[in-house]
Length: 259
Image 1: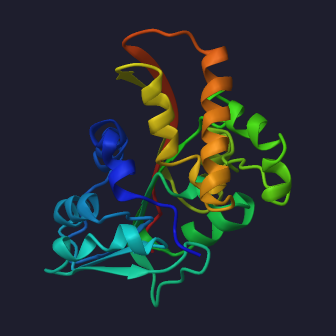
Image 2: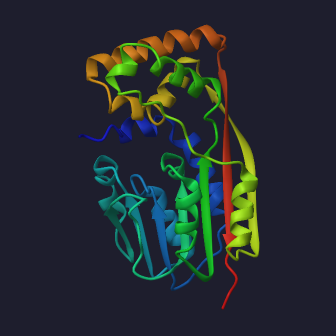
């Protein structure tokens, strides 16, 4: 099945989507000569900035989307490379000094199992840095799920309903503490985006949240889904120009105790 991820659609809001990355990057200390992994690296442009700040010997960018990785070759080199693969199957050959992930782990289910596994790959003295959206119950996402429950969409997708598995911020803080991350910074932040209109919200979620529905529907049925989604959303949110779109995100950083 062709990946629904469209780099052009995703990067329509490049500046807005990039700010949480830079906020997360600011929490990370350089790791000269170390190794790093960027889980869900996308096109690789931001991974290059991570690699440069870390001054790492080797940084690997991992992503499951061939269309996203198609652009990564332009950023590879000087110890930075990219691989096609899934986060759930990822296992480094040796512990890493920095495990980084920006806006990817909300797509991975079962955080109770996945997070301890991933954090366990961090070497003593190493760092973990993760940013995830936490907007699953906001109107833009709630309406998407409500429309998915309608026919003919529900049957066409076999009952699939997208729901992010993100836990409360304190859950991740407790996990880090239990896994030996004596230093940590876990926070919930609201990013306010000024879009031209509420139409911009539809374009925003088309680039991310709605991809789960897009890949399960025929092109014709997905267009019907989008029309219905737009109609239902516009019944709920007022037509303000510009349109203020608040987006909730969790930022997680920790340093593992040394040997």
